[in-house]
Image 1 (cartoon, rainbow, N blue to C red):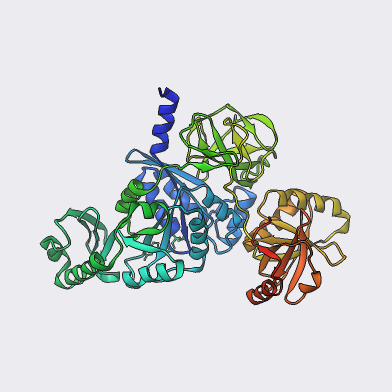
Image 2 (image 1 turned 90 degrees about the vertical axis):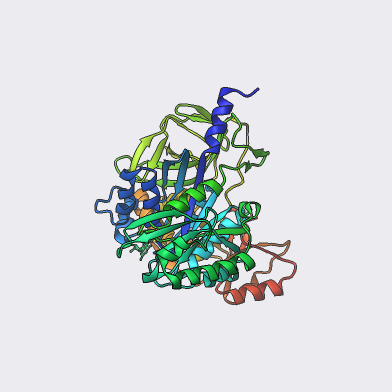
Length: 528
Ligand code: GDP
């Protein structure tokens, strides 16, 4: 017999959709997020999403960096209700100097929306983020944006998805014209047309039709565009992939939607179809077992820690993704790594910059926990036994710098800062093997260095200098016997915190050569 709690959790899990938008800067992520929030009636938030970009009043050290650079460093969570669903959007930093945080945030999502500029196609950052989602095997939905501009042909973009990302696609709707000619989209699943009205495309009308040959479309779009539409759709019907729910679920096929975020065009139908097709919170793998979201016992893991969101209290916030059970304010949970029980009395949820206190939350939700310094990335909180979630891979650093302290008298503080900040998990620390103990830091995005430098000064009072190195790849070496002399050309051998050997390479060629020359050595992208 199922209990009330079980039923409550089951219902709440089923209606939840937790996703992240992945895109290259400028594709329109802020705009799309804002429109999505508007549909949820969360108008108060819609303004704040945008405001964050050009924040006039810095409200934290982090925001100070954001302000200086005009970018968004923090990733927060936005929640809204729509058509009975509870939607969580995980915001990911949108600058090209994105960091490991972005990758980690993706582990907390159950699906992703890949946003692409119709004129630019698949861009560098999209590729990286896509690959992380791909590895996790989560469903990826594609929104091709800026249809009101002249862009590439839809067929060309589908071809590019396949060539560059290796994913096949199935268009859920299809543009009728493009750029100035854009007059609407044809919804292939629901047999309806969504039409732009007026010169400024300000009015949107949705009409139910028989199929794409319906004379209504001809009447509204004109002969030329209708002929083009029927020609293209006939081709798709014959040669395109069929919609296949299983393939979409496994992330092997991406449903494509065309639209224009800034004109709010195609956004509503996208959202409605997305909510139907996207998964609710899925079971999560832990060291012990697969944890079902509908289990009564609470569990979750910390995927991100953010320092100093509020300068008045030098606090840190640990972001926790709930994996199972029901969270209630004030509940006691086991902090598995620390091996002790803690009380979750002050959890906060982040609606853009506003902080709300959360009373209860369910799998798929993200809660921000006030952190007096007890959490690390990857920590599991659980009432469901001593388990640890495997969700947090570390990512191979791509940018390296030697670090020195300007004032030698501050050496103790410097060491403490390095130890504590690298503990958070977004910066990796290496030691040289050359005799001098030089400290080398490795990160995924340049921004992490800036944040590191800023925090060393702000929190530890230490001025440091970072000397950027030319290495681009790190590989952990596994071998009984390692010959350091083999890693001298365009490369260097260092050690990580646990004394593992790591080779840093200046370019792919140097790395390949080393791999060929050391057939008995394993080269791993991450620490073993
Ligand atoms: P982000 O960097 O991905 O968050 O991108 P933004 O949402 O800030 O958008 C970048 C620029 O593209 C802004 O100037 C937007 O107004 C513009 N933009 C967003 N959506 C559209 C669209 O559908 N059509 C056009 N023409 N511009 C758009």
